Image (cartoon, rainbow, N blue to C red):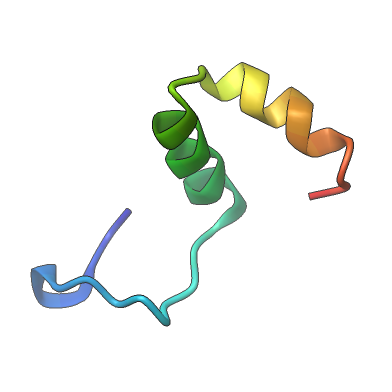
Length: 43
């Protein structure tokens, strides 16, 4: 994820791809698995 001035912005928006990457990292899963899981929720 890109940040402005290297600062974290908790109210900033993220793209779908960024959300998938973050979720995969937190859950220790690969991106393909997270995408498959997210399809069930129409994300």
